[in-house]
Length: 82
Image (tube, rainbow, N blue to C red; front, top):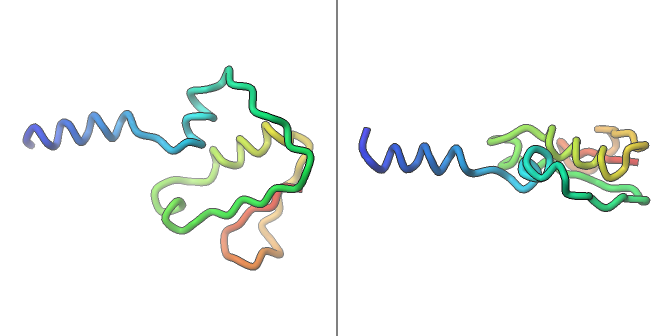
């Protein structure tokens, strides 16, 4: 393992998606409340590197009374928060 490998490991440990950051690191940040229906679509490249749990958690924070349904969407893997 060379220097490049150790730099890559360090960078990897410091890298996250925006949803991961908001859900795990920015807990004091007040997310705006959502009054309308939201549609979350998990793109294949996103699901290939991460789960959608952080996105679902953020949706639950901005619309706590919502329910999710994985049915009835024109694309595969989407999430509707109603």
